[in-house]
Image (cartoon, rainbow, N blue to C red; front, side):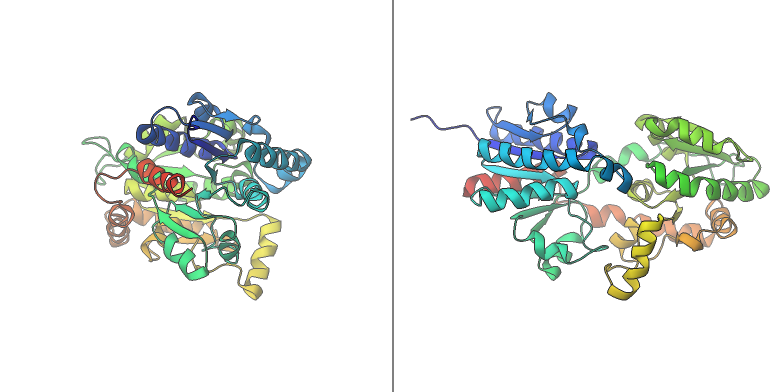
Length: 393
């Protein structure tokens, strides 16, 4: 009687999940050998490593309420298709990666129909910021959770969530690519300093923030005429951004692509950014920042309800602030986003001011707080948890 090689089902719903999944597959192959069978839902990276995808991941890779509603019938169909295919494959473990609206819908149904299949969640939903009751609900269908942020295991323990393991954040392992080598970042005494402008990675964010960011830049340039403005953009939004900044008084240098973005971070002296993962990138790069965000009408309504029902459990929406437990990074939401206020802070961060020194000092703690044990990589830490499920099955 032959023993079946390990079968691991990995289900992702967008490109970032495909990236995490591909690194997980590499680590699993290093530890288990190349005989592991992979199936599930993945993109180009995972399929290139041997994962048999049940369908093209782009079918479910959508963002924004209107886009989801437009494709809802297809997404629902893909959920049930994924459940049927996963159960038919009878994997030794099911790994769901981020995209909770899709992947958690799959996990719930697999748990109900095939409770013997262990389920590992990779990337915790933001239960610490929104709908904390999800943590306890997750514990019914997720056996182990892999967290990217160091405070998340404690949050899930407090909220009754699944057993959670901090496995590190991929950004912290690539932080050197964001930090300047000698001569890349000019001294603060120079006049040609660099201000990064990061209005978001989604079309809706750019629509709401681009004008006010342009007004802010104009105010800063009044006192710092030689200041260079650099705007890293994702390729699929380049045309929208170029059209949006065409009315700016001072035109930014728009750079496209990961390497160009990292080079801009290494040159930057300060940043004006939309809330999101980019704030953690800036923090790890040691770039002082001001963070702003404007929500759409739907989420603004929910924000109002939040005052009554307390859906959120933190008083910050900036990741470095939450990780460090401080308010070192100024953050502004909706009506608070005013060009004169943002500009005044940026002027201080572009000089050797007490405000700049204080924030930079706080940001230097990120490495220590987010560090895994010496010699332990994120993908290895994640793989060890998954292998632990295989050994117990």
